[in-house]
Image 1: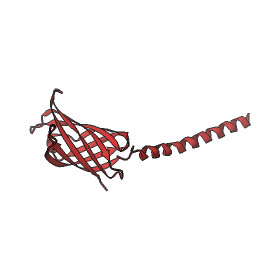
Image 2: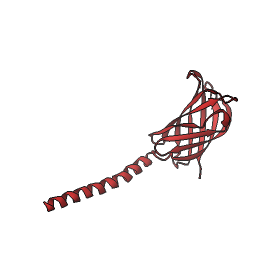
Image 3: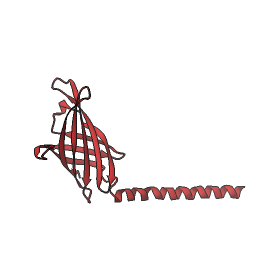
Image 4: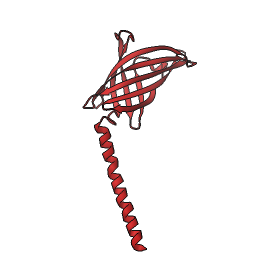
Length: 162
């Protein structure tokens, strides 16, 4: 009986060691194909664009933080902070160096009254060195009742903060 118990313990120990070795290997494979390399804080320049022609309308600075686990925070200089909350959202790895993200911020008027929200959705391409990215997508602006008022288009360029 004692011999059987020792064999069972040895088998469980070997299983645990093998599993512990697989986790870093899986993470390395995920990072090799682009997954997990977006984590960090980025200096971003957003360019608002005409959705029909693609012509640039205005550009301004932003900060984007992509956190491990797929959440993110966005702050912009394009709208006064008294008129909107920071964007809070999610991101995911699509494949290779392609990611997607989406975040929402709440909007207020100058009297501090809630006026609605903005939902930004972009597809992002990370550089092979994982130190720069470009993205493009839309911002849907909703009134306080959730009715879509307008869709705006934009592109971004991001540089990893060092």
